[in-house]
Image 1 (cartoon, rainbow, N blue to C red):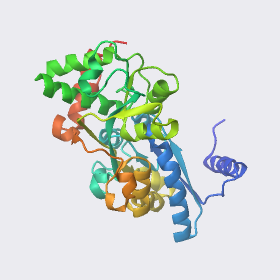
Image 2 (cartoon, one colour):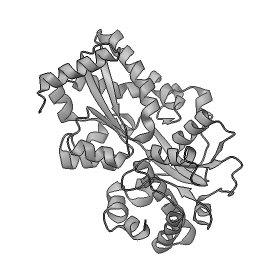
Image 3 (tube, rainbow, N blue to C red):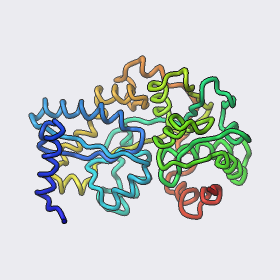
Image 4 (cartoon, helix red, strand yellow):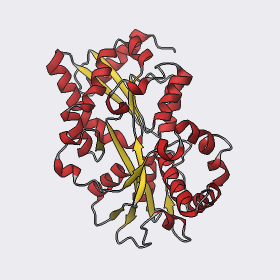
Length: 334
């Protein structure tokens, strides 16, 4: 049976009531990538309180998480996101180009190129670092089992792959050498999960692998939840700056009557409250002056490069590396 829009709203209201939630006047959906669950659970509570205090309106924020590539395709295929908070700008560019639900200049609409926070890529190893993993070249050694998600479906995996490729190209002098280097790493990968959180589960709960290539925030979360006695973070000397942008989905918010709410939601990420929460959840805030200094002390200093600086931008990267028949398909044989 096809549900009418009023019936959908009634079912949503009944669901909220049965869960004990306050019946919201409006609801927005934040479609995000894998490791942001805990950040937005905290952030949504603060924003809902802020909005109530400011306007008197009760609102609800729903979250959707998964591999960034899969989330992007879901929005292109019709998932009605009011806002997207994804792992890389290319994914939002694809939504703009293919679904035509937001303008192509979306990244100019919020401060810092629509980047309220960033991250980087580090290694998580088991206690004592038994395989002595210190840098990217250690991942290519025989006998080192490496866990990383699938670059076809995960934004974090694309950052992992590109950080390794950049190391290989600089260390060994050519694209062909970089390709062979990354191929050796992926020979050491026993399973490709679809997203970063799935790879964390494989490494931590299933006990597979010697080293997990992962988001910095995901590694810190693992230490917080499981303790430093189980795992250690290894920070390579050079890594990639993971630029994780956000935007309103214009066509959807106009349809839903949520434009003011969605815009305020993303702007709240840049406030002192939002920036403090960002750092609390192990992301690097765009305005560190608003973060707790103790939270900032956790972030190691390392040399970071961007996708634009090293690879000429995401469009070029996607074409060369991740489209069908690109370098990744040439490298990886399941």
